[in-house]
Length: 385
Image 1 (tube, rainbow, N blue to C red):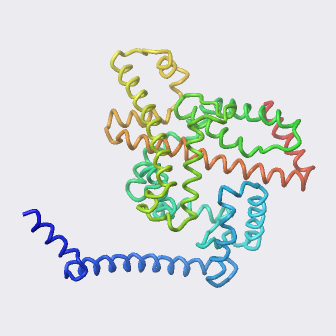
Image 2: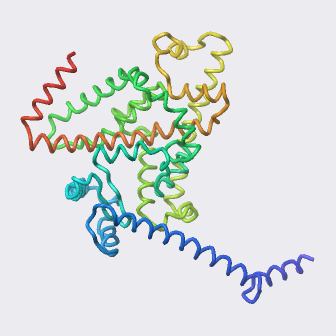
Image 3: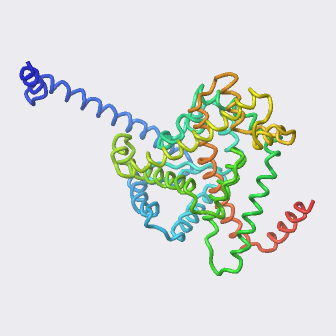
């Protein structure tokens, strides 16, 4: 009986079998259909990009541009001057189209940059076109379907839920935490003043990570003074692997990426962060249930949470836990996705902003020292007030 089944299977999958030919036909059809959709989307993107202000070039230019600049994204390119020169070149390119407020530059794919308030306003006020670019999909194993990646009805529901926690009056309550970490950053920079050459940019991610970590989870981690923290190193590793995947087309396929060494490393790092966030959520959930059951704070931490001074704040984690416990509209997995989006993804965006600000500030100081001295006096007078 077993031999009969084996013979039938060998015949079905033999090269002369009609079943094998039919299976091969459908496989090739699926591959060609996928390629057709990719080429169709690429054609539509190219057609739309050509209407935007840009240097009109042929297709070979963006491809060659990508190849020439690819080494700058590799880990071997540790010289910061390479990236500084690229940034200056990109700024110079945008200056050509400053009046239009929007431009398109080619990095194998059209990269559209908006740098005028009127143009940005049109985009931010549009609640329909909220679907993110294709490269956001590489973050899905990490951030899931959080507000950063989701779109449509799910995005609107999450946006409606999260809007109160970002209200101006709510954020004001966290100014003390922000100022505390800002002073720590300034103190660190003061120690750099005696050195001939320092890298201030490496401090920005640690500063933003500490600030957001305490604002969201009410815990201090102090990676600014302890840069070897395992949680921060894992986060940086995930970001590095994600960027490496974006710049390697052969890793865009999920199956091939999971089989690769960087894919396995990416999954391992993501699991570490998932375990950490899930543990924090579980602890806060138990504390919240215990406090509600006993009608009184059980620990010093709960006493702080339910004190009159703390009630003025709307903790992000507490807000999500309230929604989870009272209305059951959020699962613990959804809470974890939103927390990791803020704790890890947003810290990267803020650190990138601070790096850009410092770079532009240094450029302005060297070009317009008189104006900078006047602005410094203005800021100091406001801090004294």
